[in-house]
Structures are given as structure tokens and as C-alpha cells.
Length: 296
Image (cartoon, rainbow, N blue to C red; front, top):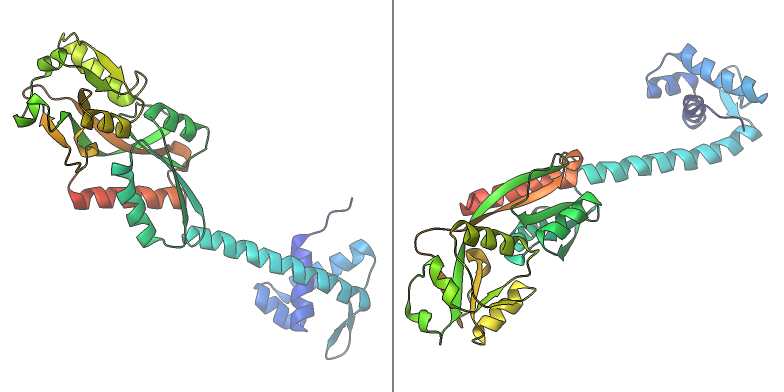
């Protein structure tokens, strides 16, 4: 199959639409001999005549008019492609897929991003840190908001908040009249904790092991929301990051007295994509929002 030169087609199209080699050369910012040579080369290659050259004007031949119909469609599509890419670069079009380990950190960022770029489509999925990073690496999401993201050369991670763990109880619990508890006291209570693979649970277990605290009965529950409901129903003592407790009046927060357990929240993306317009803009919004709230 014979290939065709894009520059020769553009030269033909310019001459045909401008009706002049001189104007077409000015339009394309080339010399007139260069332009004439491109058109001549196209005619000679296919053995056709595209223009009838008169003394003071040129006319497009029948084959030239057929070709002009095609180049109109061709360069219209090319212009459309440029407009699509330009719009995406200017953040007027696109879809940002966000993975998050909790709504408490992520929703304010989504809200701020939407206010700044209302034409963009956003979607959010929930999961634990491991599943979110798997989604990131497999490109099922563009950014992930998760706790304690471990160093990985493939991933860029921007920390935006350090959180403290707390215990919490229902209002009828004997501890509800207290202002704090010691870590060692948790060994005397039934604890409601996330599954062992969750980042929250792993951070908590590591802190207990470091303090040589042997825990008693543990009831494992697979979501923060379910843990809060179980604690409110009087099933035991929960442990959670402070920012995730919310304003549930049925629950009483109890900071730990003495040793603290902390976690760091990150917004992460693939290293190779941190400079793409959508991801770069979201990272900037996270940083600005976190700085404004004083949570970095």
C-alpha cells in the first residue's frame, strides 16, 4: 500500500482553500518554491494533475476536488484531536478515578477539586491500603488516599496528615466518664478491631507488641462503620484513628494516656503519572487544602 505525505496533503489543502500559492505559502509559513515543490511532488508521485494553472489564477481539477473533500474531513479531525488534547491539558475534560481508605480524609479533597474543575468527571472507590495500592499499580485508579504507604520506587506518595489512634466506647460504658485510658488497660476489655490485613489493625498490633501488651478477647469486624455501630450497641471497646470517629453522640472518644499510636495519611500515584495534568492538579489541591486546614 502506497503511503502519502502529510506535508504534501497539507500543502495541497492550503493552496486549494486559499486559491493561491502565495497565500498558501504565507499561511503555512514556508517559501513559495517549497510549497510548489510539495504540490508538484504529490502530483508526480500519483501521476495526476490537481490544479489547472492559469495566468493569474488557479483552478482545482475534478480529482483535486475529490481530494479536497477528503482533506477537509482529515484536517477537521486533526483540529478536533488538538481541541480534545488542549481541553484535557486545560482540565476541561477528563475522568479522575480516586481510591480512598476512608471518606473522612478524601471527601474534602474531592469537594475542593470539583469546585476548581467542575467540568471533570470524578469517581471514588473504597478499600484498605493494600487493595488501593494494588489498584494504583494495576491502573484501576489514578490516585489513592491511604494510610502508611510504604516506600516503593514505582509510587509517588505525598503525606498530608498525621493521625492519632484513640479508643472509644458507648455512653453506657464505665469508661464513658473518663477523659483518657492507658494502652495496658485495653487488655482487660473485649476489643472491636479491623481484620488483620487492614493497615489500622497492623499499626495497632505493632504498637501492642512493642509495649508487650497481650490482648484478651478480640471481635474482628471488616469496616470502621460496622465497628462504630457495634461499639454503640455495647459490644466492646473500639480503636480507630481520631479523625475517623466523627460526631456520633452515642460514642465517647478516649485518647491514650502516655504512649501514642500514630499513622500518616498519604495521597499516592504512579511515579510516571505524577506530572500528568489531572493527577498533578489533584495533588496540588490536596496540598493546598491540607495546608489551609493546618493538618500537614
